[in-house]
Length: 306
Image 1 (cartoon, helix red, strand yellow):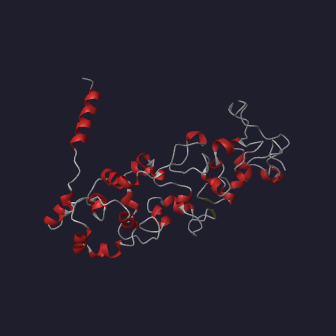
Image 2: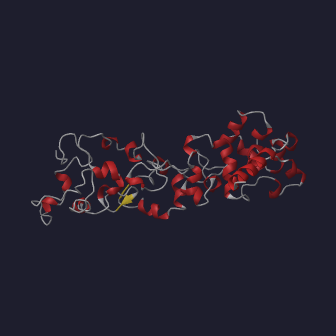
Image 3: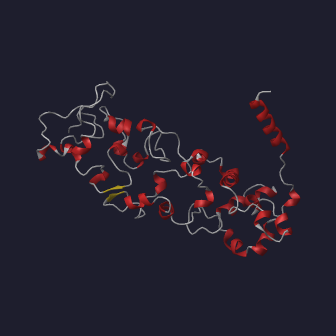
């Protein structure tokens, strides 16, 4: 027999023989209250409590046991993490499977199994405090920025630079651009982009959520913007340079591409070399955007002039 057929046959047999716990193994949440009053005291304010209250009457979908499993064996053993589904003792895969029993239907979590967080063994309980969350939204263990900074200290440093997005000030959050549960496949920068960067409208970069004037479509498009993306010229988190630019002087950013090299581009003619009349030692020509003001795209001039 083909090994693949044998594998699926065994898998199907295991699924058919797997049984759900019987209703008699469930004891109800009121029994949990006797030993866990600190959890029960505030759990009625929890979104999980509210969603459970609106759920079915099946024992597996109500109260504490909807997440922790049947509690009869736990009570008979007078406690013990080995007699119930204790999140602190379970491997990452089992924790994720447990949470996805209810949350798998949410489109924002459709990519969670292949997300960078899951691949690095970061699971739901790593960021969320289910019983007693100090934040008003999403049951996070702390405010969103501080939580992300615990694993991303380099990004925290970038948000302290002179030119930055105002995350530390509370004007925006990490999730305005990123989806911590995994993002769809890339649609810009030739398929290479920072991981878990969410899409904006349709398939565009999340930058367009706020910078809608750069969206287009334009009659004359700047390929660096349309194909490569905003991070070709800008550092999204923070920079020592004005306007989040990668380099301190504008013309040095432009010359990274406009150097006459290569045979790529839509016409296969490479990137246009700057005019011979533009002497880069002359300060007049060092600020390219003084003349090429529509650098993100123009409806009037192919050279992005006024």
